[in-house]
Length: 413
Image (cartoon, rainbow, N blue to C red):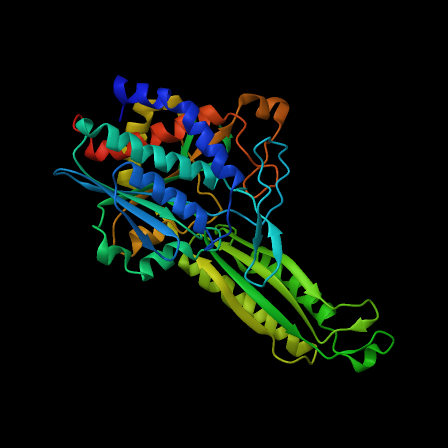
């Protein structure tokens, strides 16, 4: 809905501090499910607003803003960083270190914009608390860990989130991406892909590099598997269906003249429907096992690392969001788009209790970044960071307030 002048004035008055807070969170990212300091900072900021905080899933933070009778609305922001060495050149760039689950050390970066999401979420809460006269109802603020690994939403739910916290009637959330600052992008129905991440251990037989006849080479075998897996999408899935199969890592051996006894690769699968997901997973397993058998190798191990649920924007709620966001930001700034092939676990919060949700994107780049056909750096890039921070944050806060107040605002239509 269109925000009133007092609320807009508050957003503008806070912008310098909003940007300073964003830069703080950008400098201090933490890896998925390890967001101890980030969660403590979020909880501290919420308590400073007079709110009671709750912890779920280890590092998930929840605050309930109660303000009389009315609808119950949820808003989710994710908080984790990525194992990326930042290369933006910003004077507030991250130099943080982290330790992965396998013990490997890594640089950490907010390479997917969750620093933006934290900041927008905190200022959404601040403006709701400050302007209680404008609305009536309850808003549940969900600051979720572990989105990047698909663990966080499930961890919060398994920790009893909806047993202890009042259940919302609809849930909103948003994500910054390489679109134009000041613009929103939303899909109706399927919004983002499901995702399955698998670790494959290829088993062979070790031998000296000069005696390949005594070996079962897991590197050659793995290469055949990886090559053949590319035929799943091109030859076993209808052209009417979306699917992506990506092999992102391949590791094997320690020395150039030793054929190792095992190798490992990890793959990521994206699909839009459960039916296509089942077919792709079946074909992937069949190919991996058949290639091993053809090479006379032991049966490979196929381990599910994590999976992301569907992200499905309920069409009626999406239409409502388009109306209210368009009224606030201008209809020319709000775009109905095709589904994205990226994945999100935000849908788990609504799917688990059967309530609708709407999840949209907001742009982070100035027009100069699109000049002459340029494409700005995307999410998960070491170069990703909004270059028009002020517009990006202001737009995110206005979009979030517009969505929430469309349900609980006293002057909603």
